[in-house]
Amino acid sequence: MTMNFAIISAGEGSRLAQEGVAKPKPLVELRGEAMIERLVRIFMRQGASRVVVIINDLVPETRAFLTRLQEELPIDLVVKTTPSSMHSFYEISHLLEGDRFCLTTVDTIFREEEFARYIEAFRTSEADGLMAVTDFVDDEKPLYISTTDDLRITGFHDQKTPDSHYISGGIYCLTPVALDTLRRCMSEGKSRMRNFQRQLVADGLCLRAWPFSKIVDVDHATDIAKAEEFLREE
Image 1 (cartoon, rainbow, N blue to C red):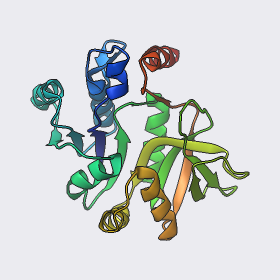
Image 2 (cartoon, rainbow, N blue to C red; image 1 turned 90 degrees about the horizontal axis):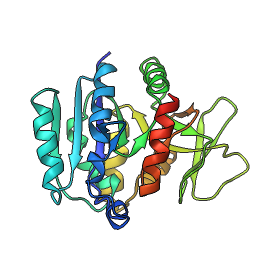
Image 3 (spheres, rainbow, N blue to C red; image 1 turned 90 degrees about the vertical axis):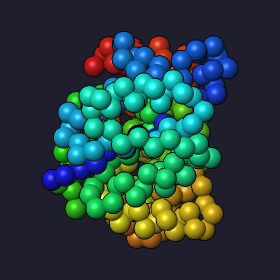
Image 4 (spheres, helix red, strand yellow; image 1 turned 30 degrees about the horizontal axis):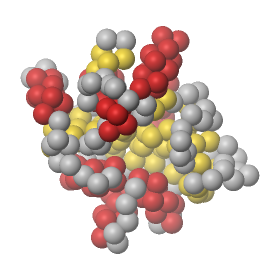
């Protein structure tokens, strides 16, 4: 079964820069490898038909790095500054038509072994979406996810609820029908990925949660060491 993968990397990474990290966020190295290259190579090992990457036009170093990487790997590169991750998703959505796809942000760090099992589960799933979740909470503004006993997702919440045992891991496996919801969100002036996810539920799509033991986001300089330690455990 063919499948596309995509990376949202159009943010400015301003917090890292303010905290003294010299490299642009996508090029921050974890165990000697740039975060964005690590993701692309993991996706290729999962049999990606194509890897779509969106970056902003403010950091030429990132574009130069990916241009060199394109000589070796099949990367579709889109360069555009956007106001939110959902807008970035929309800008690359035309490249994701027709096949199942997996979308993530560049600073989402996970264990490759768990990710491989997640992708295999999605390839055989009948759900419209399989969303990566975790009960590990180390986020300033986590998105809580309520589920039924069989892990069907019933809601996305800014605050914890009695039936929200997980938070979003920032990795989304979706079928092409989700792109219709995305376009409607854009036409209605909505923003933020969490509002897109809420609309998926409102539209009646079948979304299921797939628990990871742990997912780490690199938002601050201190998160780099946390991520490296996490990967050493792998």
